[in-house]
Amino acid sequence: MTPFSALSRRNFMAGTSALLAASAVPALSRAQGAHAQGLTPLTTALGWIPNAEYAGLWVALERGYFAQEGIEGLYTPGGPNAPGVLVQLAAGQADFAGGDWVPLLEARARGNDFIVLGCNFPTSPAAIMSMGDAPVLTPADLVGKRILSQLPADANTLNFVLDKAGIAGDFELVATGFSPEPLLAGDGDAYMAYATNQPITFENMGLVEGKDFHVTLFSDLGYTVPGAPIVASRAFVQENRALVVGYLRALLRGWIENGKDPAFGATLAVEKYGADFGLDLDQQIRQSTLGQPLISAKEGLGPFWFDPALVESVIAPVAAASGIEQPVLADELVDLTPLQEALASL
Image (cartoon, rainbow, N blue to C red; front, top):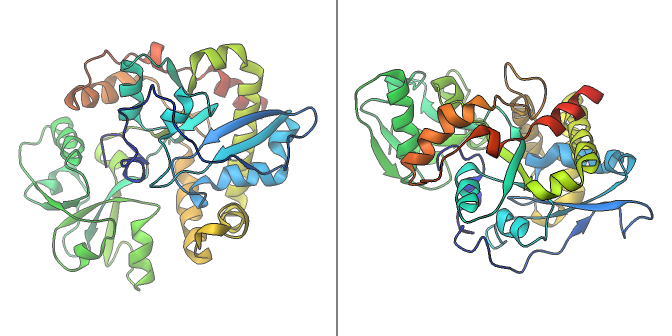
Protein backbone atom coordinates (compact mmCIF):
# COMPACT_ATOMS: atom_id res chain seq x y z
CA MET A 1 0.00 0.00 0.00
CA THR A 2 1.29 3.44 -0.72
CA PRO A 3 1.20 5.70 2.33
CA PHE A 4 -2.33 6.40 3.59
CA SER A 5 -3.90 4.82 0.52
CA ALA A 6 -6.97 2.67 0.85
CA LEU A 7 -7.42 1.99 -2.79
CA SER A 8 -4.07 2.70 -4.39
CA ARG A 9 -3.09 -0.90 -5.08
CA ARG A 10 -5.99 -1.08 -7.46
CA ASN A 11 -5.25 2.30 -9.01
CA PHE A 12 -1.46 2.29 -9.26
CA MET A 13 -1.38 1.42 -12.97
CA ALA A 14 -3.32 4.57 -13.81
CA GLY A 15 -0.53 6.83 -12.49
CA THR A 16 -0.78 10.54 -11.86
CA SER A 17 1.54 12.12 -14.41
CA ALA A 18 -1.29 13.22 -16.68
CA LEU A 19 -3.62 14.71 -14.10
CA LEU A 20 -3.96 17.93 -16.05
CA ALA A 21 -4.51 16.25 -19.38
CA ALA A 22 -7.84 15.26 -20.87
CA SER A 23 -8.35 11.52 -21.16
CA ALA A 24 -10.88 9.08 -22.48
CA VAL A 25 -13.14 7.98 -19.66
CA PRO A 26 -15.44 4.99 -19.23
CA ALA A 27 -19.01 5.36 -20.34
CA LEU A 28 -21.33 6.61 -17.64
CA SER A 29 -23.49 4.05 -15.89
CA ARG A 30 -26.94 5.31 -15.03
CA ALA A 31 -28.87 3.60 -12.30
CA GLN A 32 -31.93 5.70 -13.10
CA GLY A 33 -31.97 5.22 -16.87
CA ALA A 34 -31.91 8.23 -19.19
CA HIS A 35 -31.64 11.68 -17.61
CA ALA A 36 -34.74 11.92 -15.48
CA GLN A 37 -36.76 15.07 -15.82
CA GLY A 38 -35.93 17.61 -13.16
CA LEU A 39 -32.90 15.73 -11.79
CA THR A 40 -29.37 17.11 -11.87
CA PRO A 41 -26.83 14.51 -13.06
CA LEU A 42 -23.85 14.08 -10.75
CA THR A 43 -21.10 11.59 -11.55
CA THR A 44 -18.87 9.65 -9.16
CA ALA A 45 -15.60 8.22 -10.50
CA LEU A 46 -14.98 4.87 -8.87
CA GLY A 47 -11.44 3.69 -8.21
CA TRP A 48 -12.27 0.06 -8.92
CA ILE A 49 -14.88 -2.17 -10.53
CA PRO A 50 -18.46 -1.93 -9.21
CA ASN A 51 -18.29 -4.36 -6.30
CA ALA A 52 -19.29 -4.52 -2.63
CA GLU A 53 -16.67 -1.91 -1.76
CA TYR A 54 -19.32 0.57 -2.92
CA ALA A 55 -22.28 -1.19 -1.30
CA GLY A 56 -23.68 2.01 0.18
CA LEU A 57 -23.70 3.67 -3.24
CA TRP A 58 -25.66 0.80 -4.76
CA VAL A 59 -28.19 0.91 -1.92
CA ALA A 60 -28.59 4.68 -2.31
CA LEU A 61 -29.19 4.29 -6.04
CA GLU A 62 -31.57 1.37 -5.62
CA ARG A 63 -33.59 3.02 -2.86
CA GLY A 64 -33.91 6.29 -4.79
CA TYR A 65 -32.08 8.37 -2.19
CA PHE A 66 -30.28 10.45 -4.82
CA ALA A 67 -33.49 11.09 -6.73
CA GLN A 68 -35.07 12.33 -3.51
CA GLU A 69 -32.31 14.95 -3.40
CA GLY A 70 -33.00 16.01 -6.99
CA ILE A 71 -29.93 14.15 -8.21
CA GLU A 72 -29.49 11.60 -10.96
CA GLY A 73 -26.79 9.31 -9.67
CA LEU A 74 -24.19 8.41 -12.29
CA TYR A 75 -20.83 6.67 -11.95
CA THR A 76 -17.85 5.63 -14.03
CA PRO A 77 -16.43 2.22 -13.13
CA GLY A 78 -12.74 1.88 -12.47
CA GLY A 79 -10.32 -0.95 -13.03
CA PRO A 80 -6.81 -1.67 -14.31
CA ASN A 81 -7.44 -0.09 -17.71
CA ALA A 82 -9.59 2.84 -16.57
CA PRO A 83 -8.18 6.36 -16.33
CA GLY A 84 -7.41 7.56 -12.82
CA VAL A 85 -10.28 9.06 -10.89
CA LEU A 86 -8.46 12.36 -10.43
CA VAL A 87 -7.78 12.51 -14.16
CA GLN A 88 -11.52 12.34 -14.69
CA LEU A 89 -12.13 14.97 -12.02
CA ALA A 90 -9.54 17.32 -13.54
CA ALA A 91 -11.02 16.80 -17.01
CA GLY A 92 -14.54 17.68 -15.81
CA GLN A 93 -15.78 14.16 -16.52
CA ALA A 94 -16.75 13.53 -12.89
CA ASP A 95 -18.06 15.62 -9.99
CA PHE A 96 -16.79 13.39 -7.18
CA ALA A 97 -13.91 10.95 -7.00
CA GLY A 98 -12.90 8.32 -4.47
CA GLY A 99 -9.31 9.43 -4.28
CA ASP A 100 -6.09 8.49 -2.49
CA TRP A 101 -4.02 10.88 -0.41
CA VAL A 102 -0.72 10.76 -2.29
CA PRO A 103 -2.19 11.18 -5.80
CA LEU A 104 -4.47 13.89 -4.41
CA LEU A 105 -1.57 15.87 -2.98
CA GLU A 106 0.40 15.40 -6.20
CA ALA A 107 -2.58 16.67 -8.18
CA ARG A 108 -2.87 19.72 -5.96
CA ALA A 109 0.83 20.41 -6.43
CA ARG A 110 0.14 20.49 -10.17
CA GLY A 111 -2.46 23.22 -9.70
CA ASN A 112 -5.71 21.28 -9.23
CA ASP A 113 -7.78 22.92 -6.50
CA PHE A 114 -9.26 19.71 -5.11
CA ILE A 115 -10.67 19.40 -1.59
CA VAL A 116 -11.67 16.51 0.66
CA LEU A 117 -15.31 16.34 1.80
CA GLY A 118 -14.98 13.25 3.99
CA CYS A 119 -13.56 9.75 3.75
CA ASN A 120 -15.36 6.62 2.62
CA PHE A 121 -13.38 4.70 5.23
CA PRO A 122 -12.44 6.96 8.18
CA THR A 123 -11.04 3.79 9.70
CA SER A 124 -8.80 2.59 6.91
CA PRO A 125 -8.99 -1.07 5.87
CA ALA A 126 -5.21 -1.05 5.46
CA ALA A 127 -3.93 -3.87 7.64
CA ILE A 128 -1.16 -6.38 8.21
CA MET A 129 -1.83 -10.11 8.30
CA SER A 130 0.26 -12.59 10.28
CA MET A 131 0.04 -16.23 11.25
CA GLY A 132 -1.33 -17.47 14.55
CA ASP A 133 1.98 -18.70 15.89
CA ALA A 134 3.85 -15.46 15.08
CA PRO A 135 1.35 -12.61 15.46
CA VAL A 136 2.03 -8.99 14.53
CA LEU A 137 -0.23 -7.12 16.94
CA THR A 138 1.91 -4.16 18.06
CA PRO A 139 4.52 -1.90 16.45
CA ALA A 140 7.27 -3.77 18.29
CA ASP A 141 6.21 -6.98 16.54
CA LEU A 142 7.33 -5.49 13.20
CA VAL A 143 11.00 -5.49 14.18
CA GLY A 144 12.99 -8.17 12.42
CA LYS A 145 10.07 -9.36 10.36
CA ARG A 146 10.04 -10.26 6.66
CA ILE A 147 7.01 -8.37 5.40
CA LEU A 148 5.35 -9.38 2.14
CA SER A 149 4.51 -6.23 0.21
CA GLN A 150 3.29 -5.19 -3.23
CA LEU A 151 4.99 -1.80 -3.32
CA PRO A 152 8.35 -0.46 -2.05
CA ALA A 153 6.52 2.61 -0.69
CA ASP A 154 5.06 0.38 2.02
CA ALA A 155 8.33 0.98 3.84
CA ASN A 156 7.20 4.57 4.52
CA THR A 157 4.11 3.33 6.33
CA LEU A 158 6.03 0.80 8.40
CA ASN A 159 8.75 3.29 9.30
CA PHE A 160 6.11 5.80 10.39
CA VAL A 161 4.58 3.21 12.72
CA LEU A 162 7.94 2.42 14.30
CA ASP A 163 8.98 6.07 14.59
CA LYS A 164 5.69 7.10 16.18
CA ALA A 165 6.00 4.28 18.69
CA GLY A 166 9.59 5.31 19.45
CA ILE A 167 10.89 1.90 18.47
CA ALA A 168 14.31 1.40 16.92
CA GLY A 169 14.57 -1.59 14.65
CA ASP A 170 14.46 -2.84 11.13
CA PHE A 171 12.35 -5.04 8.89
CA GLU A 172 12.70 -6.55 5.45
CA LEU A 173 10.25 -6.00 2.60
CA VAL A 174 9.70 -9.04 0.41
CA ALA A 175 8.04 -8.47 -2.97
CA THR A 176 4.80 -10.38 -3.44
CA GLY A 177 1.48 -10.33 -5.27
CA PHE A 178 -2.10 -9.66 -4.26
CA SER A 179 -2.85 -13.05 -2.68
CA PRO A 180 -1.90 -13.79 0.95
CA GLU A 181 -1.06 -17.41 0.17
CA PRO A 182 2.73 -16.73 0.25
CA LEU A 183 2.27 -15.85 3.93
CA LEU A 184 0.78 -19.28 4.53
CA ALA A 185 3.67 -20.84 2.60
CA GLY A 186 6.21 -19.16 4.89
CA ASP A 187 7.65 -16.77 2.31
CA GLY A 188 7.34 -13.98 4.87
CA ASP A 189 6.30 -13.31 8.46
CA ALA A 190 3.55 -10.81 7.68
CA TYR A 191 1.57 -9.56 4.69
CA MET A 192 0.39 -6.05 3.77
CA ALA A 193 -3.34 -6.45 3.25
CA TYR A 194 -6.81 -4.96 3.28
CA ALA A 195 -9.00 -6.11 6.13
CA THR A 196 -11.91 -6.32 3.68
CA ASN A 197 -10.14 -8.48 1.11
CA GLN A 198 -7.26 -10.90 1.69
CA PRO A 199 -8.50 -12.29 5.04
CA ILE A 200 -11.48 -13.72 3.16
CA THR A 201 -9.06 -15.86 1.15
CA PHE A 202 -7.80 -17.45 4.36
CA GLU A 203 -11.34 -17.86 5.70
CA ASN A 204 -12.34 -19.69 2.52
CA MET A 205 -9.43 -22.07 3.16
CA GLY A 206 -10.90 -22.95 6.55
CA LEU A 207 -8.53 -20.80 8.62
CA VAL A 208 -9.92 -18.94 11.62
CA GLU A 209 -9.01 -15.33 12.37
CA GLY A 210 -7.64 -14.88 15.87
CA LYS A 211 -6.48 -18.48 15.98
CA ASP A 212 -4.85 -19.51 12.71
CA PHE A 213 -4.09 -15.99 11.54
CA HIS A 214 -4.36 -12.39 12.68
CA VAL A 215 -5.50 -9.17 10.99
CA THR A 216 -4.21 -5.96 12.60
CA LEU A 217 -5.47 -2.64 11.30
CA PHE A 218 -2.78 -0.03 10.79
CA SER A 219 -4.98 2.39 12.70
CA ASP A 220 -4.47 0.11 15.73
CA LEU A 221 -0.71 0.40 15.18
CA GLY A 222 -0.87 4.18 15.43
CA TYR A 223 -1.15 4.89 11.71
CA THR A 224 -4.49 6.65 11.93
CA VAL A 225 -4.82 7.90 8.36
CA PRO A 226 -8.42 7.78 7.08
CA GLY A 227 -8.89 5.90 3.83
CA ALA A 228 -10.47 6.71 0.49
CA PRO A 229 -11.05 10.49 0.70
CA ILE A 230 -14.11 11.84 -1.11
CA VAL A 231 -12.70 14.47 -3.46
CA ALA A 232 -14.27 17.29 -5.47
CA SER A 233 -13.10 20.58 -6.90
CA ARG A 234 -13.38 23.57 -4.60
CA ALA A 235 -15.20 25.62 -7.23
CA PHE A 236 -17.81 22.89 -7.77
CA VAL A 237 -18.52 22.68 -4.04
CA GLN A 238 -18.79 26.44 -3.67
CA GLU A 239 -21.13 26.78 -6.65
CA ASN A 240 -23.31 23.75 -5.84
CA ARG A 241 -23.31 23.49 -2.07
CA ALA A 242 -26.94 22.37 -1.72
CA LEU A 243 -26.38 19.60 -4.27
CA VAL A 244 -23.18 18.53 -2.53
CA VAL A 245 -24.99 18.30 0.81
CA GLY A 246 -27.77 16.33 -0.87
CA TYR A 247 -25.26 13.98 -2.52
CA LEU A 248 -23.54 13.28 0.80
CA ARG A 249 -26.87 12.81 2.58
CA ALA A 250 -28.01 10.26 -0.01
CA LEU A 251 -24.72 8.39 0.20
CA LEU A 252 -24.84 8.40 4.00
CA ARG A 253 -28.36 6.98 3.91
CA GLY A 254 -27.21 4.24 1.56
CA TRP A 255 -24.41 3.16 3.89
CA ILE A 256 -26.58 3.38 6.98
CA GLU A 257 -29.18 1.21 5.28
CA ASN A 258 -26.51 -1.25 4.15
CA GLY A 259 -25.46 -1.61 7.77
CA LYS A 260 -28.85 -3.13 8.56
CA ASP A 261 -28.23 -5.90 6.02
CA PRO A 262 -24.76 -5.96 4.39
CA ALA A 263 -25.94 -8.74 2.09
CA PHE A 264 -28.29 -6.33 0.31
CA GLY A 265 -25.62 -4.02 -1.12
CA ALA A 266 -23.43 -7.01 -1.95
CA THR A 267 -26.26 -8.68 -3.85
CA LEU A 268 -26.86 -5.49 -5.81
CA ALA A 269 -23.16 -5.46 -6.74
CA VAL A 270 -23.21 -9.06 -7.92
CA GLU A 271 -26.55 -9.15 -9.69
CA LYS A 272 -26.90 -5.61 -11.04
CA TYR A 273 -24.19 -2.97 -10.85
CA GLY A 274 -21.25 -5.34 -11.20
CA ALA A 275 -23.05 -8.11 -13.05
CA ASP A 276 -20.52 -8.09 -15.90
CA PHE A 277 -17.57 -8.88 -13.63
CA GLY A 278 -18.36 -12.41 -12.45
CA LEU A 279 -18.36 -11.52 -8.75
CA ASP A 280 -18.84 -14.25 -6.15
CA LEU A 281 -21.87 -13.55 -3.96
CA ASP A 282 -20.56 -15.13 -0.76
CA GLN A 283 -17.24 -13.28 -1.06
CA GLN A 284 -19.01 -10.00 -1.75
CA ILE A 285 -21.34 -10.40 1.22
CA ARG A 286 -18.34 -11.03 3.45
CA GLN A 287 -16.55 -7.99 2.01
CA SER A 288 -19.60 -5.82 2.61
CA THR A 289 -19.88 -7.13 6.18
CA LEU A 290 -16.21 -6.49 6.95
CA GLY A 291 -16.25 -3.03 5.39
CA GLN A 292 -19.36 -1.68 7.08
CA PRO A 293 -17.77 -0.90 10.49
CA LEU A 294 -14.94 1.00 8.77
CA ILE A 295 -17.18 3.74 7.36
CA SER A 296 -17.02 5.46 10.75
CA ALA A 297 -14.11 6.37 13.00
CA LYS A 298 -14.21 5.43 16.67
CA GLU A 299 -14.61 9.04 17.81
CA GLY A 300 -16.17 10.55 14.69
CA LEU A 301 -19.48 12.37 14.35
CA GLY A 302 -20.81 9.73 11.95
CA PRO A 303 -20.02 7.98 8.68
CA PHE A 304 -17.29 9.59 6.53
CA TRP A 305 -16.22 11.92 9.37
CA PHE A 306 -12.55 12.16 10.35
CA ASP A 307 -10.48 14.49 12.47
CA PRO A 308 -8.95 17.18 10.19
CA ALA A 309 -6.02 17.44 12.63
CA LEU A 310 -4.78 14.15 11.18
CA VAL A 311 -3.90 16.01 7.97
CA GLU A 312 -1.04 17.85 9.63
CA SER A 313 -0.13 15.38 12.37
CA VAL A 314 0.01 12.22 10.25
CA ILE A 315 -0.60 12.86 6.56
CA ALA A 316 1.81 15.78 6.17
CA PRO A 317 4.87 13.98 7.60
CA VAL A 318 4.34 10.92 5.45
CA ALA A 319 3.67 13.11 2.41
CA ALA A 320 7.02 14.76 2.99
CA ALA A 321 8.66 11.33 3.20
CA SER A 322 7.06 10.54 -0.16
CA GLY A 323 8.73 13.54 -1.76
CA ILE A 324 5.78 15.96 -1.78
CA GLU A 325 7.22 19.40 -1.08
CA GLN A 326 4.05 21.50 -1.05
CA PRO A 327 2.80 22.24 2.50
CA VAL A 328 -0.14 20.08 3.56
CA LEU A 329 -2.53 22.25 5.56
CA ALA A 330 -5.88 21.05 6.86
CA ASP A 331 -7.74 24.32 6.33
CA GLU A 332 -6.71 24.36 2.67
CA LEU A 333 -7.29 20.68 1.96
CA VAL A 334 -10.39 19.70 3.94
CA ASP A 335 -13.94 21.06 4.08
CA LEU A 336 -16.22 18.95 6.26
CA THR A 337 -18.98 21.54 6.58
CA PRO A 338 -21.18 20.00 3.84
CA LEU A 339 -20.81 16.61 5.54
CA GLN A 340 -21.57 18.14 8.91
CA GLU A 341 -24.78 19.63 7.49
CA ALA A 342 -25.75 16.33 5.90
CA LEU A 343 -25.15 14.41 9.13
CA ALA A 344 -27.10 16.95 11.16
CA SER A 345 -30.08 16.56 8.83
CA LEU A 346 -30.18 12.83 9.50
